Image (cartoon, protein in one colour):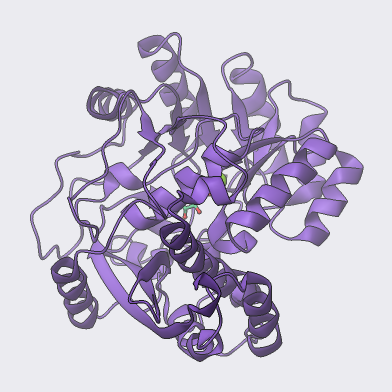
Length: 427
Ligand SMILES: O=C([O-])[C@@H](O)[C@@H](O)[C@H](O)[C@@H](O)C(=O)[O-]
Ligand SMILES: [Mg+2]
């Protein structure tokens, strides 16, 4: 009987994989990106999986939450959620964790939502396997057969300071010409149909020039710019004038909802965020000003795939569009994102993904294939990917060896420039 199936083991394995020297408002990516892989094993021998943040405080709360699932049915999502909310509390200031602004995974305030998300995806994977249905069917069914992603461009150096492995194939990207070359490589390899540039790194004039160069090189493609709130309101207004007519959306140029609301008065491009609407309280506030028109969801910190679908309904009630945010991730996250996006009708913007920046994989069969910039929604039961145990062991060994335990782009940047302030907004 399906009802008798129970969860018997939950395993959490932190991993580290190679990541490029990608620049952002806070600094630069370290040579190793961290993730946690969760395996939930049922009494009938199936294993449901998920992928989430790998910073030390996150690994700690996942370890704490693990036992809460034992003897639950994989269908007991609500009980799992109640148990996690009762047991997992937000971290405290000064508890040693790095509250890194650009990586919501390091924010211990969202501990319960992050844990619920990780457990929910693995339990949905089990449910799908038991019922013989893909996860998107458990979310109400796919409204699209493939999920479009966007080319996510980064300013970057050619190699890491003190690099211990061979540099990636993307090369340096600092000038507008190099950014265009990066876009051409990425579009040629993945077929993306829209482009996002991670900004907030260099003088705004340089980033505006890069956007204009991208427009020239890709006349028909939607373009987005995300300075991660590293521009003042004045800079953002001036840049909006320069970029008028060029942006599909203008993502988090300036900090806070008040700044974004003021900017909205001077700017025709819709404003988007994954920074100033990250909680229900912030959602309510934005609903009253309607400053931000597009929300970048992220199931990893919004409480899971079902919570993301509910968030999408709220977006439609308040006449907001929906897109999707990402951090460095591998194929298990990519497939969870794909199921969610397939089942959310109003997620109409191509989703973000860092996937092209990752060379390593933890799933069987190697890297997930993109066709014309999109990932095919799996029709097989569950998530549609399985763990390659040999790769998991290898990436876990890298975690043990690499020494990184909390993402810290600021500290990494100071290895290149000891005087780097990291203050924001910087321009
Ligand atoms: O990976 C990065 O450097 C990004 O800047 C990431 O940390 C952000 O969370 C993200 O991609 C964003 O859209 O703000
Ligand atoms: Mg963003």
